Amino acid sequence: MGDLHRTGRRVAIASIAVSGVLAASKIVVGLLVNSTSVFADGVESAGDMGTSAIVLFGLLVAAKPPDENHPYGHGRFETLTGLLVGLVLVATGTGIAIHSLERVNFVHTAPAAYAIWPLLASIAAKTVMSRLKFYYGRKIHSASLTADGWNDMVDILSGSTALAAVGLTLYNPGRFLAADHYGGFAVGLIVIFTGVRVVRETTMQLMDTMPEPDLMRQIRRTALSVPGVLGVEKCYARKTGLQHHVDLHLEVDPQMTVRASHDIATQVRIRITKVLPWVADVMVHVEPYPPLLNEAPVAEGQEAHRPS
Image 1 (cartoon, rainbow, N blue to C red):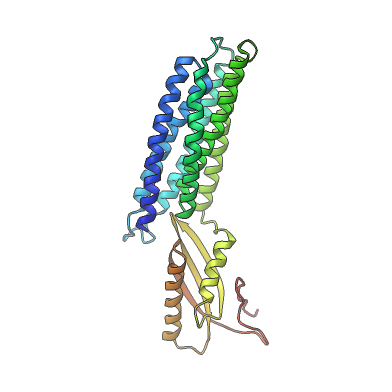
Image 2: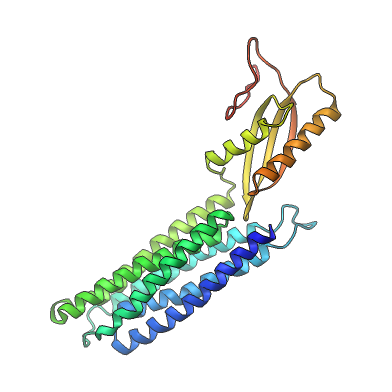
């Protein structure tokens, strides 16, 4: 578990450094060449520093071990930071959009051609960072790191939008001078949309929404592979940070002793946490298996059904 948090922290620290360099270059260049699009994209990158810092803080807190008041650990704090990243994106996008619209009728000289270079550098750097965050975010099941990956995808899209807007302005300043401002507005809308998506996804996790069906099938399959397990009556899981906690109702031979059924439950718990590293712990409940007439043991991926 410690390796998961260390990996997430390294990616978050690298993201802060990259975003800081990109933000400084785009803001400075945007002010020098008087480009709303480049400046707006720089502000968005500056916001990335804050969101990556939030992610880093969330991973640090989530790494704390369980205690008396937090028996399930502190992992939910990591999900909360993902939610905060989404809210920051919505607020940042709104500010960028409003600022850009306010400057639509502002007459100014066309930006210099070198305004495109920090945008190209940003698109290249954020492409690499987004791939890293998505890869490691999914590998360690980090909601906040994946949210930050979407944040980088926003940077790629917003940088491309700003590049197109600046390109139009440079191509024909007399006709497309306002394109630079509308490009900044489009960047703001992209940021808002992505923020709303991140808020929705993290909210679903905080509401204990069940994991995707494939993960549930993995849990069932692993439980049914333990000798003595005749069926899985119920299986629930909830995400608590980087890992899941599972509630499992096993069905065993009703003639079995309490000690024997307890041993089977223990083996199920051990095997699931060993085979599926994304599972933090399993609460196993043992039920008597009541086969119907001519009914075979429950097949993989199916639930046992009790007679009504």
